[in-house]
Image 1 (cartoon, rainbow, N blue to C red):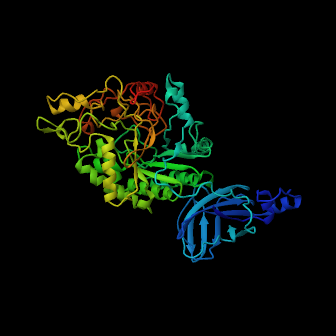
Image 2: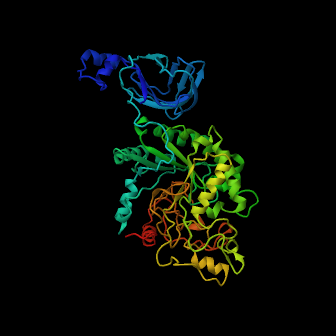
Image 3: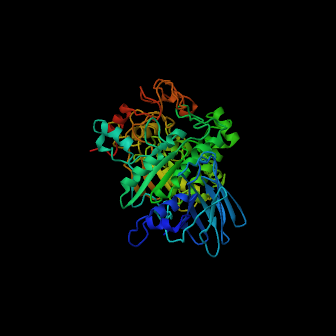
Length: 573
């Protein structure tokens, strides 16, 4: 049970639903309540004996403010160790919490919330007195829940696998689009990720749902059971340095804007005790850190943009900051993007990638404890399991690794890669309990083109190409791939070390436009989305394999959705 101290008159307890018969509020009591200049609700959401998480809500009943500062003192040896949605400083037992740049406005009758983690030994008493800008906020006798929002709805203790025993949030916006397609009701009840891919998405774009709207809808879906909400955190400075279709709104140097206008507001919403009963899975900045491994330096695949992001460190800083801020919230589960087997499965990428991830996970105040796991194949097409050949096969004395398709990779599918990469990540210092997610939204590769068995043994290329489920022209192709199908349906604990198969990329949302389309979303035109493009070093100078007539990334692509259903594996009934 959360402990709470609300800075209000005892009279307020009479209207806050405390035990006992209902009591009418007299005019005198109403007058007393309205005369209170401020209230402060300080709740301990989680206490594990040597440390704690507290949520603080401040309500201003006096003149509107453009900035604010709340002060209190601890009775014991509590020390604030981290915080969010406020700037917190401590001197001895005295603590001051001031506004961030984005939440300084505090209207008359308005409230603002922030949170902190702390350490202590002995007892962890609730502070008994608070001030707002030097004015004392009156306190009750500790018996009331008062005007600060009540107790947390959850225990604040993370479980090993958030997907275990839980429903997963069905995004009503995506569900409506899917259901409107012929045959779409067969999958429109599946859970998909909610993409926060620009600052405006936090409050909703073009009248669409914002983050709070989705969380409120998740609470409504939750009922009495457990519910997972899947969020994609995706707005790094200089985003997607090796691609153009998914370039973002922030320039390479805008790390401070990323922190204060993107991550901080998201953290403020997720830390609201209203949502404490949800299990919030955040997938952190897809396609970012892997680019620092494969598309920098003197490699043929290097780009000037990726070298810039390697040099300025803002991918590492941004990911570290996001992990630290979001990881401080007890019911948030951070999963860091780990590319896919066709990106990091080669010997010169595999171990270096794990080390870059460790660097990011220990920067900007983050620790490995802020990482609950990793996700592979996000928004990609790599087959989950190739059953018709293995990496250990050979044809006429030639290893499968020497085939043009495998090209010396150590892995031929996502499941084997994810399980092996998990072991590598633990070896460099990540916790042994981390789990992997695999995005199976578009890697089914079913339909009439799906091979029924191994290819001929006339050559290693014939053997691999004739038997592989993944029908892409090249493993480096990633944009709106022709022939792709829905993969395994979302499910928890499907294999050793795998927390879940997920549909993090909502099927039917485009990867990028086939031609240049002017837009105000910061999205460029990438030739890999042009079906006539003949390729580059990153896809072996092959055709792009992209579908024609695609809209901007993230926009609904009906033809693709129809193809995904037609080629689903397992097939749709």
